[in-house]
Structure formats: C-alpha cells, structure tokens
Length: 117
Image (tube, one colour):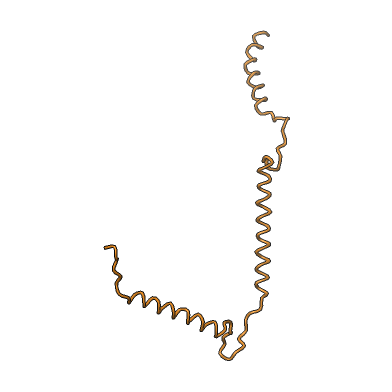
C-alpha cells in the first residue's frame, strides 16, 4: 500500500499544480473608467476642450453674421459704387506729382563737391 502511495504522489502533485494553474482569480480590482490624470492635467484638458468649443461657436457666429450682411447693389448705370470723393483723389494725385517733381530735382541736380577734400 505504501508503495502505491509513493508512486502516485508525483502525479498528484502535477495534477494539483495544473488545477491551480487553470484556476480563475477571484480577487479582481475594478479599474477606473476615467483617465487617472492628476488635478492640473485634468484642468488643462478641460480648458483646451472648452476653448475649442468656444472657438467653434464664435466662428459659426461670425460666419452667420457676415453671411447676413447685404450685398452691395449697383445703383448707377455704370455698375460702379461711388465710395471715394473726387476731391480726395485729386489731393492724392497732387501729392504724388509733387513727390515726383522733388525726386526729379534730386536726380537731375549737379554733383555736390565735398569741401573737406
């Protein structure tokens, strides 16, 4: 009898180890479904999210506001809308013609002799 028990012990030992190997673990720790970020990273993520949402809403608001503005219609026969007065155009043309005259005077003037030489 004793010899039968001694011969079966290594087999029993192997079977017990196999049973332990295939046993399911009973103690599971439930992992959090949320990200485990520290407080400041969490604040940064929320800040970026809110900023992104606000920028989308602001862009949509601007688009709708610009989209509602009336299109300039052609009131005259020529199809041009008068936006600049004639006096202002003449004043600017006069300014540039004076600058052109000054530039021509500088270019066409004689060479200046350096008195220190």
